[in-house]
Image (cartoon, rainbow, N blue to C red):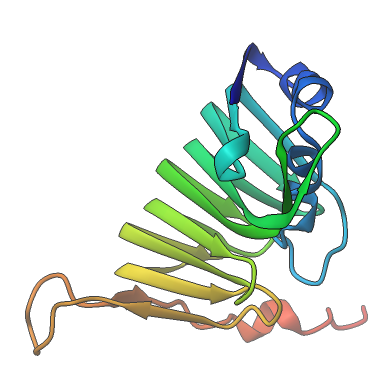
Length: 194
């Protein structure tokens, strides 16, 4: 059984989904960890939402945006998979679903925090590993610094990241590439008294 909810880019999609969808849907995004060390709720919006109870799956489509604390994830499509719950049946006759397993974002994926921005073709958040993996044409920026590659893995809790590419060898196009600007020490020092 599945539910299909449409909205014209409105936050009402989340409210409507909570009313017609099974309990796992309302809880799943809140268990995600998009923001570093945050227990804040995840606010989701999209043009439409489909819930497939038998697969413990929610599919958000069209200008999807997930916000948690000071982190934002945007994509064309965001699939949220929950782990199958116990074999018990819910009051509506369906099986229950457990905690968040993973989120898969595809199409124009952007992940933004106050200090970093990452874009890629696809991204997967694995709840157990607490990682976000970007693939495709990945570009990460921090201030004026820019890093490019094919695959970026971010450990959400620590902020540690690793960029990779399949291209190896000096002077070959497509290798991991970074452009870094040294800090201007004069900006870091307090102004001299007059």
